[in-house]
Image 1: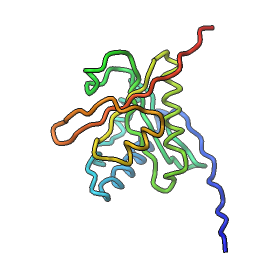
Image 2: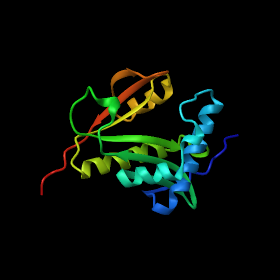
Image 3: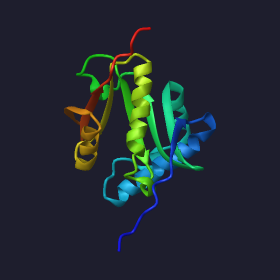
Image 4: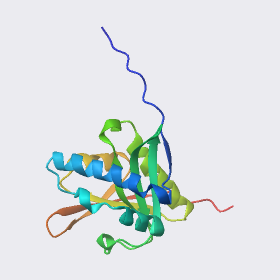
Length: 175
């Protein structure tokens, strides 16, 4: 007997409002706890605060993905150079803290959040978006490669190795 599962509910992505910092924190802490449950100590849950989210909002963009009234994902985009990329010249936007609640994992929300950040970078005339992740997270590295990102190098950090990924963006046509 074959079961027919209902298709996932649609989701929307929009900028996080100044009053939604705690919502962003909740999504990030949920993801951090999931990582810890898998023995990946990449994001300590207590690292995420409303003040840190407000700082990201003041210096870049933060989006939330919503399914009905539930925040199910987030991503941040920064426009100042990231020190990890000091050996790679050129302007770029920097993606940080892509997170999706596990209850909606595998439903395209992560890719849609990446596209939102990429679209913003294109609108700002930037030629690429860059991101980093723990080099030991093979599944995440494969996800970024499948999303069109190219591994640009590995950078040793104090206690872990960081993988640097970049995606070249289409130029905005002059009108």
